[in-house]
Amino acid sequence: MGGCFMWIALQIFLGWIYGHAAEYFIHKHVLHNNKGFKKIFKRHFGTHHRIARKNEMYDESYLQLSKNSSAFEILGLSLLLLSHLPLLFIIPYFWMTLLYSAGVYYYVHRRSHIDIDWGKKWLPWHYAHHMEKDQHKNWGVRLPIFDKFFAVLSHN
Image 1 (cartoon, rainbow, N blue to C red):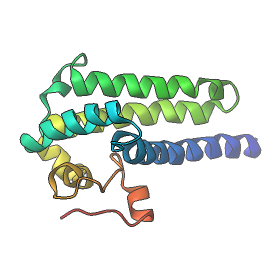
Image 2 (cartoon, rainbow, N blue to C red):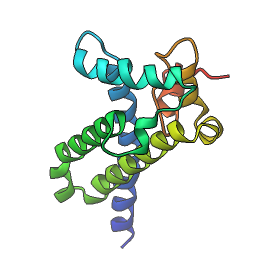
Image 3 (spheres, rainbow, N blue to C red):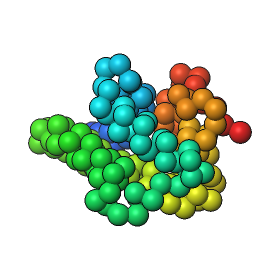
């Protein structure tokens, strides 16, 4: 019985860490990579970052699921979850933790761009990612775990 619990707990823990790692590395190496992923970069940085920076973090496209940033994000998260779907049959709690992480990511990222005071209070590193001079730091949205690990966390 204890072994089963530990196996489930390990899957959840590893899924949680993997979700943060994926968030960090995709944000840094795909969404902010203007050489390797030009169209994605333009969509993310050229649209979402431009709008957020121009409007003190506010991005109205998050008010509707079908508009620019929101639809692009939902599509990306869905494709990421689908690409990991085989894991559901091997390590189900890991995959369910990824599903949970994707939902929390979308919720907090969306909320940080429509409720600016909430975002400043609960995600100051993400606010800094958009509003400070160097927008190539603070890649984590939910938590700055990997930003701290790689010493790229910066916010006032």
